[in-house]
Length: 255
Ligand SMILES: NC(=O)c1ccc[n+]([C@@H]2O[C@H](COP(=O)([O-])OP(=O)(O)OC[C@H]3O[C@@H](n4cnc5c(N)ncnc54)[C@H](O)[C@@H]3O)[C@@H](O)[C@H]2O)c1
Image (tube, rainbow, N blue to C red):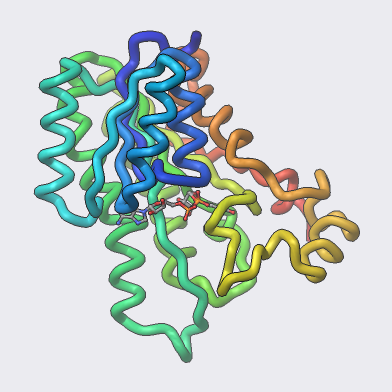
């Protein structure tokens, strides 16, 4: 078990990639604090406990700095340590620069970037005390290549990559590693846009699958991101910091 005895915080753990990360971490021996806006995170933790794992859910909005602080304080006092933070929660909306709004921009930065900064600020003192820590932030291939209509999301995801580099330098002397993961097209509730599962559309099947814009010719599954997160959270990852691992079936290597 790669995460035996570790205490991990996972944001956005009610569904999709966050829920898969929570489950994989528990399978590898970690104790989980699972955060989400949605009540469904209670069920994710309930199911984990039913199978003998340790998981506690926290339902709140990560853009509320006081709520976030209360949660981290509680985990630290109950478990005595915080080893891993996975910054996974995010939102996305589709609109080009002519149709998006300042409110949408600000909300996206608040959830997808500022709350990541704040989460890191809250856990870092615990990691420094332990002289061990792993921070993993979920970026996106939208930070590297884009089809448009996702300006606020792409900017926040690019911000994660740059912030991760700076964080990695700040924390390297203290045994804390910070890395990011940039998923491509992953089959989750986020891939349902305006009621349609993007990965099932004729366009997706033709362009990404049959034409192999994605060389591996399929969308990824949340567990395939979770396995990479396990690696980055474990002692197997000992000489990688400040990096972004692209997990996209080859999407961004094709033109
Ligand atoms: N699915 C993809 O194809 C894909 C691709 C690239 C990157 N990503 C990234 O992976 C991560 C997970 O994506 P997903 O597809 O599982 O998304 P998802 O929408 O299925 O899950 C995101 C979770 O975050 C929670 N959340 C949103 N705002 C929150 C807030 N303010 N406070 C607390 N919780 C909040 C949501 O309630 C939801 O449960 C995100 O960072 C996303 O940007 C996903």
